[in-house]
Image 1 (cartoon, helix red, strand yellow):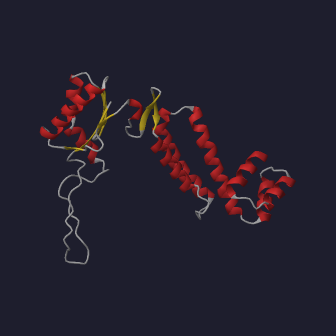
Image 2: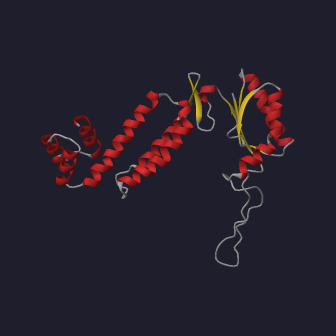
Image 3: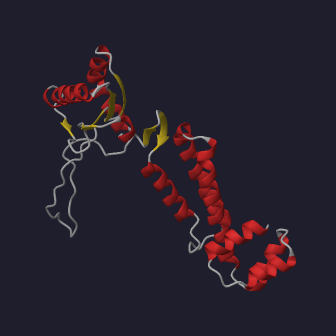
Length: 237
């Protein structure tokens, strides 16, 4: 498998002129290209890289490309190196674009990554980096030290989680979502436990939720840590 990342003129960052302007600030002048991440960037990449797409199709290669990110599936490592050399030479000599050598490499399918996906046992799955980023974002949205209401947390989660699942859900099974779901629910309970603060309120809130009075009192009087307490509350409710 060959993965190639090009630096086309549509994504190339312009050089910045750091000479001081008339005021006290420095003037940042873009020499060429469009802002990276803008809606125009993938459109211009599609126009510029249309010829390489046609050449790969003509040769019968299986590949996928989004904007300037390209992955080509090759049967053997020797053929992959040959295809990488040819496509890199075409991009640099014919189209005058710079190939990112640091990200362009030949690897096995299970060691590759493309737009947050990889292959695990011949199946498409999210990369460990994507899953780690997902948990990091959830940890920020459910952090117990974040001084916002629980309703605001829920609205933030409802904006983020469906979008992530719509994109990465194609590479997930039901069992893959069970552990993150339990982990998220535990973090939400920590948010409630932190906001209730006082012992009397904690006991009252647990009783409202249906806990046995004796168990609610034991939990409210406990001095154990947040993470341990929400796990204990979950098992007793």
